[in-house]
Length: 280
Ligand SMILES: NC(=O)c1ccc[n+]([C@@H]2O[C@H](COP(=O)([O-])OP(=O)(O)OC[C@H]3O[C@@H](n4cnc5c(N)ncnc54)[C@H](O)[C@@H]3O)[C@@H](O)[C@H]2O)c1
Ligand SMILES: O=C(O)C1=N[C@H](C(=O)O)CCC1
Image (cartoon, rainbow, N blue to C red; front, side, top):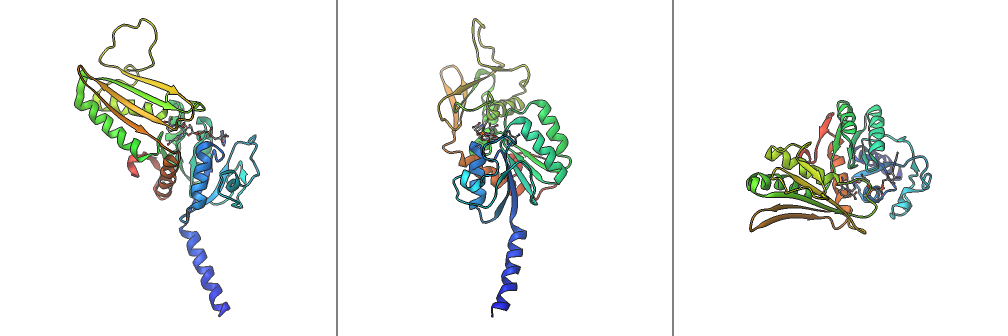
């Protein structure tokens, strides 16, 4: 009986391993990275193949499951992708995002990056890399914000020139880039919908005797405060009325779940540049 059972078990194991999506994480010990690693370790449909950090990180060599609060996982935090991998999720820094993308292209691993603060040059490099592997870049992996991108653009178009558009974002004190990638994307979406110029019509804060507000302007304002996970408001100010649309993230797991969901889809796509609207 045992002899008969074992090959069947092995077969089931092989089948399971073949269907599991193999996911690596770059920036594994960060606020986002730890939650993404924990979600993958909990997930029966995916396998965590690498937990990557920069060479100087204090946790190199430690068990990622223990660092991420999941419990022992048997996978050590490292600096290089060594196990076979289908897709890598990156939440690190702009320079690291481009470096790991180059590494993904060499190893034919799909890429999902949520890293913000990317410059036009970083975007150019990632676009070039997307000719070799599927790449998804998104400043916000939550469903709510991705709906907000479309709704805010539609509102701007419908309300027209008589409404002043201001974007206010609030994030935790540790955030390094400003304004948030999401606020920038909201402004870009509104520009695309209204014909405003992304270079000329977006301003960042105000100070001094700057004169009256012109109508063809989008103001972006960054607030840094305590442990706020991520709030975005677009204010449409008219005469005698004001319309506001707000998104508030209650937990980083919203972004982490979005990233894992997205990775599973992107892993199976042909090379190219993708956005959240391609997968939601
Ligand atoms: N797209 C989204 O939904 C979303 C959500 C939250 C945060 N973010 C963005 O994700 C990024 C990370 O945010 P966070 O709050 O987790 O930051 P964090 O500082 O807590 O984590 C970043 C991690 O990346 C690691 N890192 C830095 N350089 C590295 C390298 N060369 N190789 C490997 N790892 C490296 C750091 O050691 C750190 O552990 C930021 O750009 C942030 O704006 C995006
Ligand atoms: O915590 C952060 O950093 C976040 N950054 C994203 C951005 O820059 O848009 C949004 C989610 C939280």
